[in-house]
Length: 438
Image (cartoon, rainbow, N blue to C red; front, side):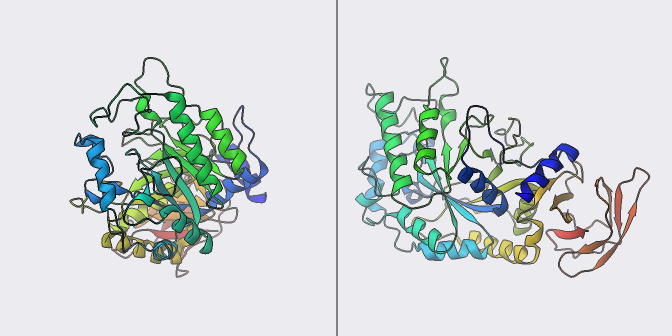
């Protein structure tokens, strides 16, 4: 409660960009839900996992519609899906070692294939040679290792005949003439009920695909009120996020941003206003979400660490994606990046976990800030800097020191009353050097 009050005061006085625990008009979150929002905001770092039978093709999760594949031929890949090397415990341990606090797993993507033992469809993991419940294994490992469990669920479907066709998946050779909105939404609600009933605590449902009908002349009714009420009735603490690229709607508990930190729109998906809900940015390690064999252009560890700092400085979590291989292994380059992030977080985690966003460094790219009620953390993202100026911090700062080795730095003020830190001599390979202002 003390942290929430501090955050609210900070927003009023300083305009910090943190998403705070605030109810939306027409929706009153439960006490359990408000507490879950706070836990979510404390974690700051999660792992996104795009994995399904599309990994067999090695062309990413949009392969069916991008290549115009007949959905009935595509479905035959299920008979070859046997991820013999998958080990949920190993996955979760690797993510914990990297410093992540939760995962978000694609239970059912746009291709319509379900990665759990669902009674609502035969197009699912139990009807493959593997015949083991992937969601169940991950849920068990998450609960045993104290890892948050978020479940991605696609609102659209390129395979089901009852799904009202949107702007994507028009070339997947559905037979047509069988669209039935009521049938489709009953299917969705049955699957959501399974996911929220059979796998213990689920920390969030992460929806995607509403944008499939954003070109409709008549607004498409996604029955969100009914779906959101169902989720909150089954698990009151379960958070709801929707990657619709719009302002959050009543019933949603977190705001999602795709490939951009809140307030930026370089990728073209995030022009919406930033709300006071807890925030999350999702981003890929390479260029694709699902496994693509030709995409080995991974962001460097330094780039990803800096992205984590920039996201936290906006009061948001980073959901960093991995596309597992068809055999169930995580790509070696992804594991390398995770190890580096984990090493950095072990030394600098105080500047990320449990912090609020802070815009004290303005809109510059090479310096960002996070904060707690006792300290401001200055993240130096450019190791060539010798001096930091323009730190517009409305607190009385007594000293500046390194977070990791307690090196002291000269602290002054300029004519505008902004703090200046002099005497920087940083290692050339430093991804993010953190200075604590106390």
